Amino acid sequence: MTWESWRKPMVSVLFARADSCYKHLVDDVWDIDRDARGYAGENPVICHPPCRAWGRLRNWAKPRHDEKALALFAVEQVRRCGGVLEHPWGSTLWGAAGLPKPGLTDEWGGWTLVVDQGWFGHEAPKPTYLYIVGVDREWIGDFQVPVTRAKGRTLQMSPADRERTPIDFARFLIGVAEVCEKPLLHVARMNVTGVAVDGCNKPGGCNKPGGCNKPASCNKHGGSEKRDSFKRWALNELA
Image (cartoon, rainbow, N blue to C red; front, side, top):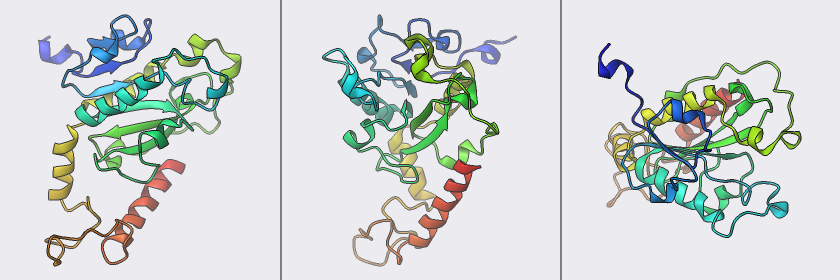
């Protein structure tokens, strides 16, 4: 067996639990002792920043004074290196950091995928937002979603069981992060291949001097294509 055949993925995991399964899957894992705020690497990242200051029960949470800022740091790393940020469905981080709603794309080429962690082995459904930068929705493909949702309830679980990332979910996120490119390179390739970054899908670009600055929803400049793309995405989500 050669080194290349068994080496671990070149992915960095930030804000992992001390007992995280990631430590068996990748080499570069940053837990609370290592302090992910010191990360200055170039690998694509998988970020699991603390969510209690951002979630639906935030009014009852008691986060550390510096805890809420960790999620904003995680957004910066995903936009700098490419990769995935995971947070619970309904997280207010999306509004605070300007993360795109499902079906939209931001200026870094980032987009949001909604999944259940129950699909990957969590005892509860645990609906989850994934902010992904560096790879397109089409690459992800379709999910084989169970007919019934997981039966567990997060509020009835211990904090550790609620937080733990199922190993199949970790493997899925590693697979996504592995193919993520740095955002500037990714957006440049989107532009070259004719996918609208500024809302203009006309071959060869817009005839207007300086190009088209109209929003992507403009009917004259790619609106129908964006709508068709959203329909395809929505069908994939509901499949």
